[in-house]
Length: 347
Image (cartoon, rainbow, N blue to C red; front, side, top):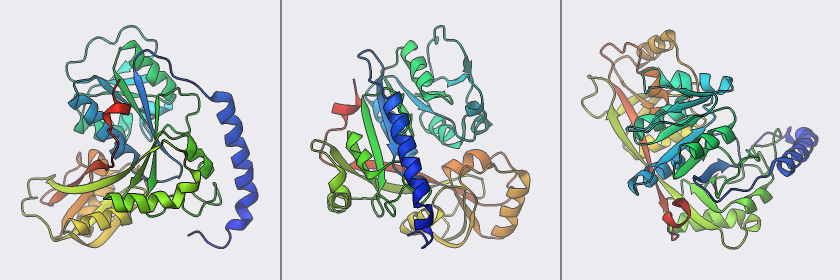
């Protein structure tokens, strides 16, 4: 819950609400019938709600079905979001992109996170068969996917991209606190009023590991849902992978290093996986690490193992870790629900 000073911010929240409504009305779009199938993954609140893991899971499912796919994002905190160009990271065995003004091709290099942002770099690492299309204007990224005649494009963080036409809107909510304190920015965490949930085709509760937990979370927002919406829970599983040669024996005690929205959730996930964190070194979300940060991490860890996220490791691994045992916590997710995903995901 937020502090008692929140009511003082409520008039600003009302102005914010009016502005969002105007922008949404002016930029609303409808998808065309031609390829690609556009699937948006977004949320109502600021901060981590599992959007990128969900988007990655969808990308991998499209690839498993033998279809071509692109992951599209703004590339937050990467160089690609600062210019008008569309940055294309081709899939393995990708064909020619055709002619498209402002398309810049980038290889899957060691410094990819600097160009496309940490979240897109994780997708590139995990899904080599997927194209990445990163642009400040996500609508142009989808246009590029259409020129490439791709089957599906999964757009990360696009619920509030009102001018983007899409076929499916997936909305992510935290199962424990679906609407936060129920207030709009800046009085609370909501980007839009709860009534915006009615726009969703699919609602996914991050952290609801079974049908019972999913139903409990659904009841919290039932007043804002409409008939026919598919409801799922998002089951999370953490696997530790060695990041350095010294990471040989699975750690029981570790220093956690996380530049993510909710480091406490990361700590809880590791505890469930049997890893105790006696110390946590938290940085702001999307933090860009420097050599001095790596030195600080090594010194803080001492003889303990270091455990970090995939999102952090794509920026940290370039540094010299000497004899430190660094482990990467790989997050895998799975949808829990009764609806057939392929019926709304695949063209």
